[in-house]
Amino acid sequence: MRNNFLGYSVAEILKATGATVTKANLVNDRGIHICKSMIAYQRFGAGETPESAGIKGDHLAGKYYVLFEKHYREEIKQLEAEGVATDIAKKQASLMLEAQQMLQQWEAGDEEVMALWHRMNGWVYEGFNETYRNIGVDFDKFYYESGTYLLGKERVEEGLQKGVFFKKENGSVWVDLQAEGLDEKLLLRADGTSVYITQDLGTAELKYKDFYYDSSIYVIADEQNYHMQVLQATLKKLGKPYAAAIHHLSYGMVDLPSGKMKSREGTVVDADELVKEVEDAAKEATLAKGKIEGLSEEELQQLFHTLGLGALKYYLLKVDPKKRMLFNPEESVQLTGDTGPFIQYSYARISKIRRDAEATGVVDLTDFAQLTELHSTEAELIQDLGRYAEIVTEAARALSPAVVAQYAFDVAKNYNRFYTEVPILKEIDPLKKAFRVALSAKTAETIKVSLGLLGIDVPDRM
RNA sequence: GGUUGUAUAGCUCAAUUGGAUAGAGCAUCUGACUACGAAUCAGAAGGUUUAAGGUUCGACUCCUUAUACGACCA
Figure (cartoon, protein in one colour):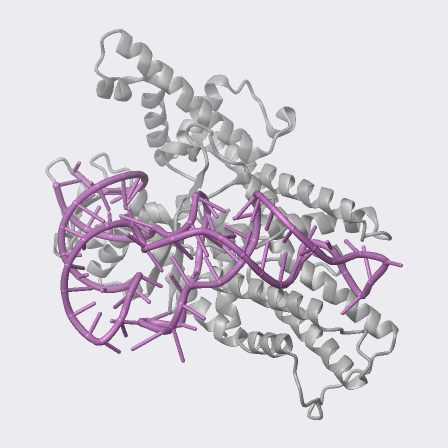
């Protein structure tokens, strides 16, 4: 989720600076991990489907992945008990052998394997799409590893011909990046199957041919820092013009208070469940406040969704991307303090003022030259609002939504102070009153746009 | 072993890129609602910026070394 939110937000920020942005999603739809899930499904699945099991397709595939790892570990333990050394047991376990065999069958286009692959991938995509819709993230273009790894193999071939790659006795292909301060890197296995980076070479080329970008930003966790350096250096060796245009927006992994999340062991926080939890927290708080009479059931659901997602997105985006962050489930559900709903609250508050202002016929002025004195909170707020353009520029330069998040919080905070210290609709002087209403409106607009850059919606009431 | 990231208040994070008294939120304590919306506001308390050196008129920020935690490569 940090990945999705970051990518979405950075795209919005760059668009705000006038850039043309295409959001691409690279789908990891092939490889040993997929085969593991498929093997486990063949063995233990008993024909289960998302419909029959009543769970989302991506969760179902994930379940079998975890199941594979579980049985795999058991098998290793068993072999060890029989006196087989650990590293040999890992290689000899029947599950692993089957998975590797399946990968080869897959690359050979085996019909049965392909059928199962299509079927299970279909479930996964459906599940992903549902989640993307739910969290308000979208993409302009999808790339699939299965569609790019062959192109990657061609690039490897090209590198061999150009003499920038080399072949070892066993037939595996490598690139020597020691001059770049990196190591030798495997590009193609001895058996001819591709490795992770192979498809990246293909994907990079495909992306470039599709869009001829000036800059291609990869939003990937920092555990791939080395991998990205290798990719860029390898493309440079191939003399690709787009090698220099690649940027890695590297972000720190998200830890749980209980430690690192591991998909293998199933110790992950599920995105769908998490969204539900924050929505529930928002619901409880909203109902307790009792400010939302007259909203339909549907509008209420929408509101809880807006607030819940606001809390979650803000929580994940307010931290500098490059920092490893701690995900505290209790804090992520918080609605007070330095949170999304705090800022949304300021917006809703202003919305009420604007409704009342309209109802009571406050004049809508734009010329305040006659206004001679400003309250200190007004001056501060105005100054803050004026920083918007500068903030967007800075956020785009640093590729950091955290800059925008911090700014939105500052604006909301300054507005709240202004609000408590200065009368707005209670002001008697019509000029001052009109000015303060206009200032409020401008603040609301700034909040809306700023949060919009983070992918967060604002409610008129909450 | 090599490369690399991080270290700031009890906790989670800021600090306009080397500038004035290091700021917020949470938690703790005190105060403000017969209301322009208290999901708020005002205030108190909380700091040898991991450690030791160095550069500089000036260092959280740059350099060196060490320590801790993490990631990756072998």
